[in-house]
Length: 263
Picture (tube, rainbow, N blue to C red):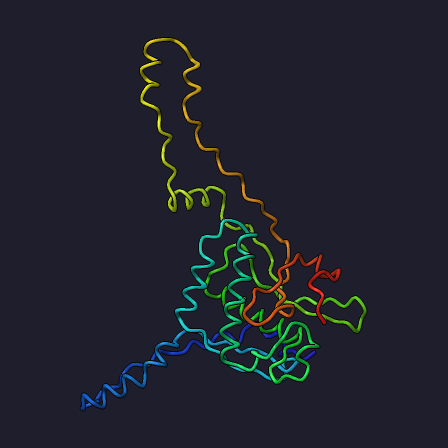
């Protein structure tokens, strides 16, 4: 297997936003120059190389504009558990693949290997594992993953010749329960329960503690977040169309052959 197939990221070569040069004397020339720069400024963001044509035999650089990246950052912000973050990661990777498909031949890719065997933008599991790992590392490098870290792709080979690769995430401990509770309180403060007006009057007139039954119950404390530090999951985009959320499965299940039935 070529070593370059699973390079971490051709990390995004951040594209520099161009600025008008000095010494442009004519206002009309400056205006034309500024208009010419608009497409470049709109696309300032991050570039990543995507693999295709099987075994990463061809690659294409795609650019992810800042508005798209801002949306991805918002999608991943404030996740309350590792399980929630995995769902959001799948959505984010799907969005990035959708943009990559608009800029490169991988728009011809189809789930599995059979339906697109003759297409110029076909992707096998090596192409997908490599590209998805690069996209995940982009998210990781920007500090958008709080519950996971990105590992090297995993291999399953139940029949020796039937090899299959996929990108891998490892769950981390994540924020503490106290930190999560503080975030929830800031995001949506819980109002104090309202006490009916008649309650103080009744309590003043008698010793009847049954009146207390009419008091609203305080909100239940949130349950501790379920955590499994060290648990590993595959993010397998080979099963889906470009732009769709990839399949996320526990690594142990995936190694046993679990996943959609595609060829």
